[in-house]
Length: 267
Image (cartoon, rainbow, N blue to C red):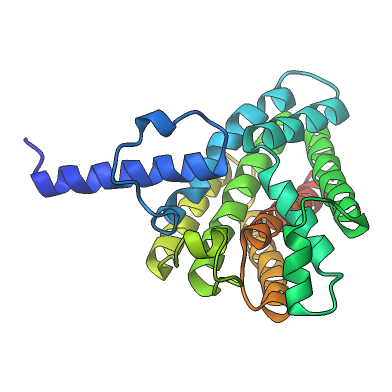
């Protein structure tokens, strides 16, 4: 049966949006496949969890390679950093530094400074350390559990970024927050649905319990809500750095929650 022209256009549009998400959120060289008109990033938020999954799959390989758990976890996080160009880590550091400013204008000014301060260094050390330690402990329980947890955390945390783009105003009149556009709640909701779809197979094959999966989704959402609420109060909205910080805190909260509940289940 032949495809209708409208269905072909819709499919091409969704493919372009998925490529847009990969271009913005990863270093994969897929820009050559994107043809004009290029979708606005806001329209691609539904595909953010797919970008997370595309990052987590190669990053999981060290966890499944039979390496010592601590080495495998360091390499897994290192692959994630490499494939994203440390974009989200940079956002976390900039936002942490900006929190030290006395006024909204000063905070935004600090966040635009390319230099990293003590708050940024400490935030990176703590969050990256927690990510590595959580993955290492999960890998000691089971490499497959660790790989599944990484895929869940990468997808959920990026779905939260899309929701922030839908509900938060840009904090600046320029910059990524403004240029990306305002995402629709429907697109952000589809992103959460796709992230949940990543979780579902891990429940079906027994890797995660239903309770652990629901708790991980809630932990990610709460951590990102709290950071987003803080950004709203301090900055008046979201920026690219805020989105990066939300991804990092969401991923960290997800991994920690899955570690706590998986450890209790294995005991």
